[in-house]
Amino acid sequence: MPRSSRRLPLPSPELRQASLAGCPGGVLEIAASADGVSERVAALLLRALESGAPVGLATGRTMQPVYAALRRQLEDWSDPRRQLLLAGWCSFNLDEYVGLGEADPGSFAAEMAAALAEPLGLVPGRLRLPNGRAPDPEAEARRYGAAVAAAGGIGLQLLGLGSNGHVGFNEPPCLRQAPCRCLTLSAATRQQNAAAFGADPAAVPERAITLGTAEILAAREVLLVVTGAAKAEILRCSLQEPPDPAVPASWLQTHPRLRVVVDADAASALRLS
Ligand code: GLP
Image (tube, rainbow, N blue to C red; front, side):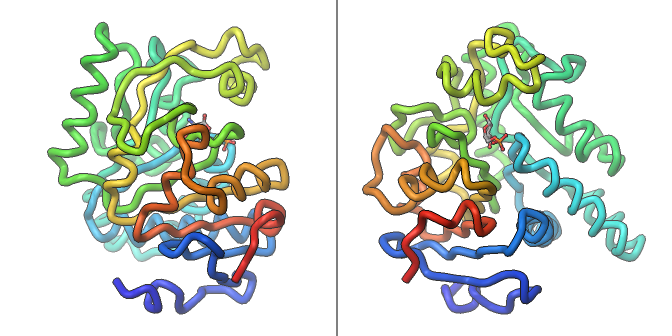
């Protein structure tokens, strides 16, 4: 799609668009508030889900209000349109902790069940994640990567941003073409995600399965969502410093269709052109 048709129209005067200096494939959308980010991202997700191509979903605090907005927006749809979307739902989550399954409250499977699968009444198997309880996590990573490929790859890939520049659980250092795999989480990430484990970083599982930068960059479009001043500097490094294995999100600069939706706080360190 030509870039101009990706830039317009904007659904709300609360949202403004800017070009990102140093990131030619990127479109930046800045919402006045985190609520504006959630509404915009939810609308983009619904549009992608309606198209029928597999959608890549993410977890984390950034996504909780996005999924709440998605549920709310769906309530305004007509019954037939909503039923059609739910019946055709096809999504693959980015990642899961090794050793955890849906019965574990800290698992991403539990998070997605509570945020989307249960409230929307999705048919089991439509919203997919890596199986954290698989006996052979390496084999499970290979199976999951193959399942994404067999579905035709990801259409729209939703991404949050880790405080150390990770996307999914692609921890630094990370090459541009890392495949879906099982890896060891960094201390910084276990610290970042401790809230879901009684605020104890040691209780966060040591390993995870994640889609790789290979699958993420193969998506037809990437949607990076970042809110809050605490991530302003890592967002700037990710988008406006040369791509580097030390900042896995920096590989997103090489994607031809990158949309970045942020609030004003997260955008505060970016150079706009
Ligand atoms: C987590 C997840 C990522 C998520 C990121 C940001 O570790 N693996 O997929 O996007 O870190 O999380 P949060 O939105 O809670 O800051």
